[in-house]
Amino acid sequence: MNNKLLECQVFLNTRYPQQARMLLPFTERFLEMNLDQKEELYTKTFDIQALCYLDLGYIIFGEDYKRGVFLMNMKKEQDIIGNDYLPELPDHLCHVLTLLDIHPGKRFVEELVNRIVIPAIRQNISEFESARVDLKLQSQKKNTMPFSKKNIITGTYINYRLKYCSIYC
Image (tube, rainbow, N blue to C red; front, side):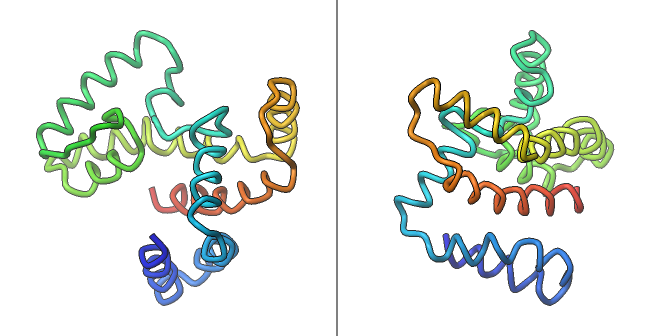
């Protein structure tokens, strides 16, 4: 995990120095974390009472029936490229990025990026605005979820990654 992050940081350092500076605080903090801390960061950011979500269809459509249609179509597209997305859903960001990289349909890829990926990433980035984070912290305190302002600061580092994605998607 650390090696991939370092590879990404080195790549950005050499080709995109401005974006590399955006990722560097996250890289430094992440490398200091032990495995439990990394898992906790992931869970608090994307999983239990999440600040943002990795399932793009959920971000765009919520619980609307359109999400079900979108998921069926994403499953078909993931099957076309032979991408084994399980145990996640086919609209999970990790698997969608793989799909974008190797899908043969240029028009499909452009439409997916413009209609789903960019808006979803922008929505996730907006979730890290200070007022929204404060509201989520208040909500989590009410639900007795152990979560502190100190821990949420690490989420700003996730924001750097999401901003990087939005620049290049």
